[in-house]
Image 1 (tube, rainbow, N blue to C red):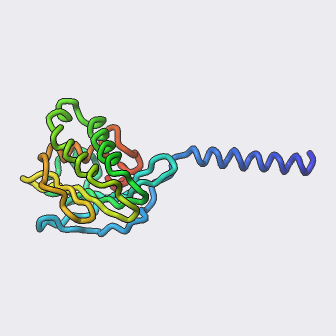
Image 2 (cartoon, rainbow, N blue to C red):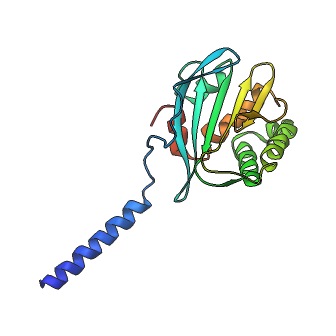
Image 3 (cartoon, rainbow, N blue to C red):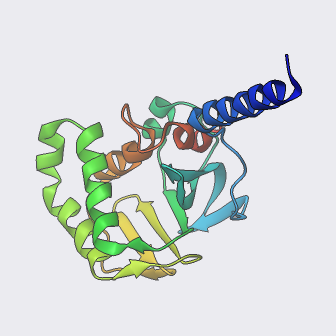
Length: 197
């Protein structure tokens, strides 16, 4: 076999290998954001349960962390865990506010029974309103969702509360299922949040 033929075959092999590599989902890796190992919510210390990156195609949308009173590794444990919980986000690119709110509500609908979705429609509408109130969340900007027992879910953008808490523990369970439900927004992110990557 001629040297040029060998060179062509080697180039083809490299191209095929690169294509196959691109088709394989990226493995979970540490986030670009450094999340605190613990935070305090209404006087209760919460631990970093897990953190990961939300990917959509070739783009990284946001880094995300889940804080709980004790470490859990299953969805059932997480949903049954009493007390406050916190979801912390840091945008990695421009995230249009209205699209973000609608995607969250879509995720709730895909991971919760229809009757629950209808029952909590007003709280879901409030979620859309909060994010639609901003043209976008820019790179490096943060937002969070905090469950406060007896009060509901408090939304924050840039550490500022957005109105009063909404919903109840059941509603926050629907919020959590966006990322850890049976049809999660990102399977690798689900594993990371549950500390199973």
